[in-house]
Image 1 (cartoon, rainbow, N blue to C red):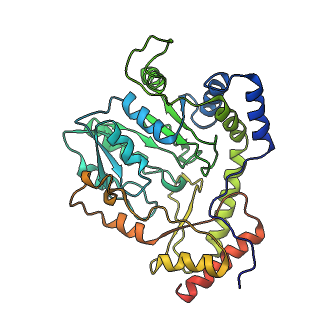
Image 2: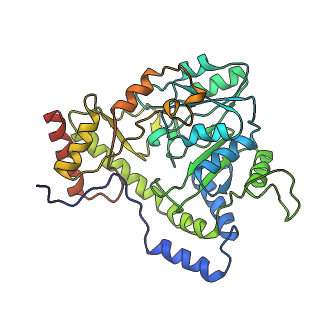
Image 3: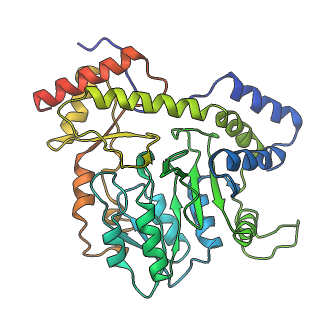
Length: 367
């Protein structure tokens, strides 16, 4: 019989500092987009993407949608994206009226395969949007070379990768825009929200119009826009979390190193040369009976694990129409094998030992 407390695969951290920040905003009487959002945008840019301008919105999906629209993506265009990711990536492309073109991943970091990307480029391709999946940067140097060679834009879905870097350059600095999610289970949160980094003033202006009903000045609507604004309540939470995220990331990396050193029977996540992984998820491969493995961790050891993502985008009913007859073997293999183990900074040393014991026991037993 399992007697130890359940170890969740993810655990948002919200403390007294965040509650005090919310109270401060509520007492101010200004709760919609205002000075907290402006301060958060500046601080986030300085922290993660120095030299860039950041535009805050109400969700990561909104951030991708706004970024694509600001960059001119629309009907008749194609944007190359991975299928092995959360549906928001493909959804955002489709919502602009463009076509998401799903291509395969490489097997180590689960990110876009540059060879597959180049093979998928057509006369309608206007952009390439890799996902820095699980907190590991995509192959940005190769993708930049392909984008430049073919005269297409490069974008970044950095929803899971706050602070990840490649050869000393942080993600969100490679593309025309980079989007970071602030959903509760991400490495830092604002409760809900998204941050879009830009290096072009005109894209910044268009993004700010799009998030605010198409207007810069009240009742002077310049284009058809949305209500994608972040509130000052959410920004206040985000500002507090921003002061803590580096320590949390260091703990995630320490936890990942401990798992790397002690797990057996599973394929631990390799880190590319020159890459800094921030371990939004610690994702291993279980070649045989992944689902039985996950069930045994829970039932026999009270250890939670997540499967991200069991159904690739190109097989989702909502997006399959863009990918009829498409075969993506590495994507399918990953979808059948991946398991994300707890790596969050709330884990105690005893819980890490329990995770090691559980994974090694279940893998040795063959689930």
